[in-house]
Amino acid sequence: MLKRISAIVICLILILSLSVAAFAAPLSPEEQLAQLLEISNLMSLHSMTYKGASTNAMYDTLLTMLKQDPTLYNKMITQMFSKLDTYSHFMPKTEYDVAFPSGEPYVGIGMIVNPQYRFGCVVKDTVAGGAARDAGLKPNDVLLTVDNAKVELLPYTEVVPLLRGKADTTTTITVRREGVATPLSFTLRRKPLSTSNIQYVNQGQGVGMITISRFDSVQDLLDFLRIYNSIPYDDGIKSVIIDLRNNPGGDVAVTYNMLNYIIPKQKIPLFALQNKVDFELFSSTGVGVWTPNALVILVNGNSASASEIFAGSLQQHKLATLVGTQTYGKGRSQVHVPLTDGSMAVITSYEIVLPDAKPYDGIGLTPDYIVEQVSKPYVMPDFVPLDTTVAILPTANSNRVLALEQRLALLGLFPGTPDTQFTETTRFGIQVLQKSLSIPTAAYANVATLKALQAELDRLTKQAVVGEDLQLAKALELARDAAKRPLLEALPPQNDTLLTN
Image (cartoon, rainbow, N blue to C red; front, side):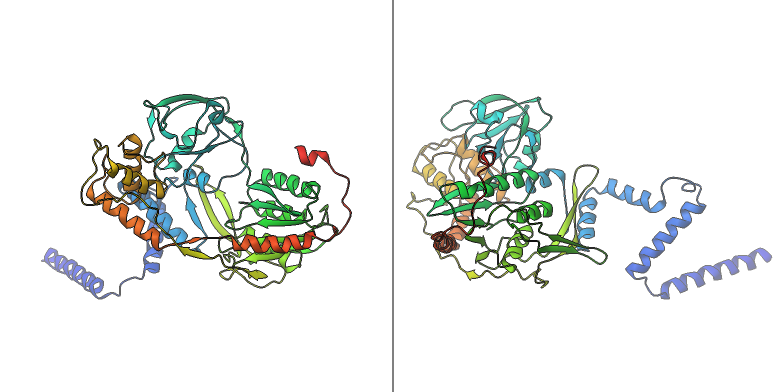
């Protein structure tokens, strides 16, 4: 009898528990997380499995889930950075090295790839002093293998790391070259190389122009100083144009030092970085060696971050005139934190403050002279007609192949000269297009590919293209007018090392 009563009590307790659970309010996500953490801590304290271990239940469970579903990793990374801001993000090492080239000397073969090809590694240029140029690699050579690994249709972000390595090591590559029947093989020795983000052109009539594509490295700073301080000795240059259009920014320290060497004899605040706990002011020290009659800076909607620091600091002190269109408006600075595998966490840490202290994030800087580029509808060249209803096979030798190659070349996807012969270069261009548009790849141009190609061309004709560079024309007008006057002050003695280093 006692046993029966006990069983009834137990049954009642179970029924009561189930009833309470059935009518309990569901936990919020925050409450669920807190409870999971509480359970994990209890298991770590009391469980024979986890007590005293270096891990805990939450860690072990997450590790098991990642092993079972590898895609969970990318989902979690995306969610974690989505809690921050639009500028913060995660980048694998291979993507980071391509998207943010350091400008510092790197070890490689000195081959510059053409970024128009999202898939496939096509030579755009070679670097002076590099093994690629010395060996005779040419623009439009298509990489087929790197140390016997097939790379022809891989994203170039995956191929570039294979070409780099330790100094004095070698890599063997094969390439396909237009007009050469068989692939060419090269064994190339890696060496330290560097490229510059700073270019200079004498525009005539007393005007020199510096183009800064990024603010990346100490090498960029040294190149800028050498060029800027040499300008007034280059055939009597009196005015300077600095082109920052499409410059996405770069290193704050490099930007500051370039600014500092533009400003002689003045100690003025240039910009500051601030967050909830820090405020760091960057001021000039008056070490600049000369002042041009006019300093004109070209900007556009793709001038961002460090470019806006550079242009805005000088504009607000009336040391430069801005010409172009409203800048991007990135008034935030990020820290780039490397992880153990070389990938990078890019995290917004500071607000950028310019001399007028007005926020410009999401707004941009307004040029002194707003000059829009004149655009016009794109007019398709007079190509051979293309029939998109019939596939073009690898055996073809006709004007249909010419029509196909002409259109691939217009899209920047044909590394050669269009002709009537279906070759391996034809096949390569077709497959790059297919992969870029997420079409199933085939070794010929099927109807689906031809129709997608025509759709891309139709889209292209609706886009506007820039005609005359009216922004540069206005900058030249201002700079040349100022260059007609005598130089503002006497130049210091010429330093020959500036011109030759």
